[in-house]
Image (cartoon, rainbow, N blue to C red; front, side, top):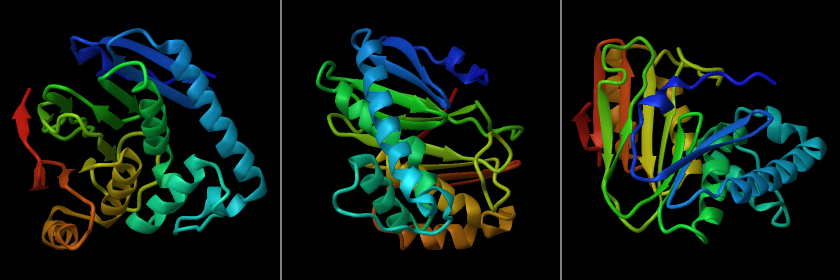
Length: 240
């Protein structure tokens, strides 16, 4: 298949080794202390194979826009996506990109003390020094002008962005970008979708902030719609 060019990867500098891993629809950008492409590809293929096999026998898991339970014996990626669907009040597939990034990243940590895995704007990070994640929000004037400084060292962090105006993911809202931060990339993916669905106009920010305060597990949120922006929680925005 033909992969969409992800130009934002070209403007990201790092002292880490960067490589891409592609398997069908999955297109990962990985940063590590060494080239681990073969290991990353094997893990990506394993996770995809297990998820696809499960979906063949459980179509509702793939199609639902609401939480779906699974068996305790289901593959780890299925259980992670199912849990995210209930925590974030979304369908399981809303967490698939973050779940893939998280599981591939965790596997690579066996070979590198620092790992960053980006999967279509959904990111798993385990870092030893502060890193900055660029925020891409389509045509908004904030797009690619702001970065999210991540300074949680030694523990996994998930940073995920959902958009109603960029990409192919489904969104019921109108936000140019909703970026969620928490300890799980799968949950961050689900939270970004959940809050993205709520953004109809800039005036919705008060409702968004109230819901964010009441949402366990969500550490930070950045919502962008046109020239308006809300930053809530543990987010450190820097100019790029």
